[in-house]
Amino acid sequence: MTRFTLNKTAAALALATATLPAAQAAGPQLNLSVYNPADKAIFPVSSSLVTGKHDAILIDAQFARKDAEALVKQIKDSGKTLTTVYISHGDPDYYFGLDTIKAAFPNARVLATGPTIAHIKATMNQKLAFWGPKLGNDAPARLIVPEPIKGDTLKLEGRELKVIGVDGARSELSVVWIPSLRTVTGGVPVVGNQHVWMADSKTPEARKTWKQTLDRISALHPVKVVPGHYLPGAKLDLTSVRFTRDYIDAIETELPKAADSKALVEAMKLRYPNLGGEADLELGAKVLKGEMPW
Image (cartoon, rainbow, N blue to C red; front, side, top):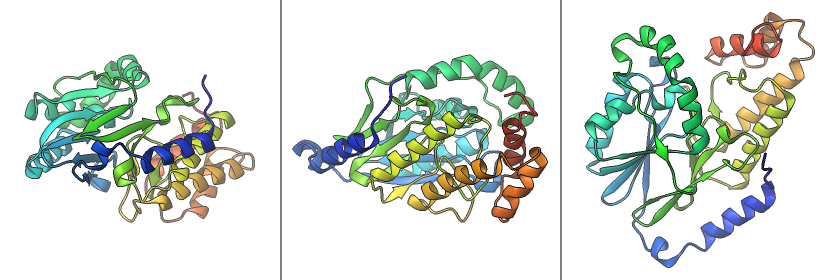
């Protein structure tokens, strides 16, 4: 897989930000608002609405219908025309709400990277079979598969939103970088004020790549970072990046010392006594200790 050089990439992105084309620099200022259902939902997943003077781009579509409907209201209240929905990750909490979004905004394009589309296609039926009964009336009426994004850039009224990390060893850790706002949003790498989902990163190499992604985000010096999942009390800045990285380090410290998953859970609770999302910790611990296939 393609490896990236963090310092060179960060420097190139910083240079690109500093030397924006005149047309882009002269374009209207963008704004960003976040919808996150927090602890009222199964998954406290974030959706970001980026707006210009007339148009808008939505990053991620929510999981439950009721939250997608709340997101539709937020978009309509903005008074902007939704041109694009970008799905930043292939898990269902990022795209199950697409049917509700498309029903309200039928002309909006739905885009994602190739790896995200492949992940959705490979897992969507089994995800719906599992989550549909649990969601009940909040389940999607139909599943929508995004179209592939061309290149790595979305444009909103002359300003760029860059997808970064697709070239990395774990393309599923990609995020969206908005240079004009100095904001990182979308994806799963950053978590705020809850136990971090570790089941998808059971090998040391996977965790190393994850930390490299977090370092890459930090090297951009963003002023705002929207965690893919967060609970109340999380800070939408580099604090959550550092929290996520420290949590991974803590897992790696406690993992070899723990006799089993229960011991690992207790060790992490001692380190982080006030975090929500204990079910994520418990399942992840079973996977990391080899007690549960994943």
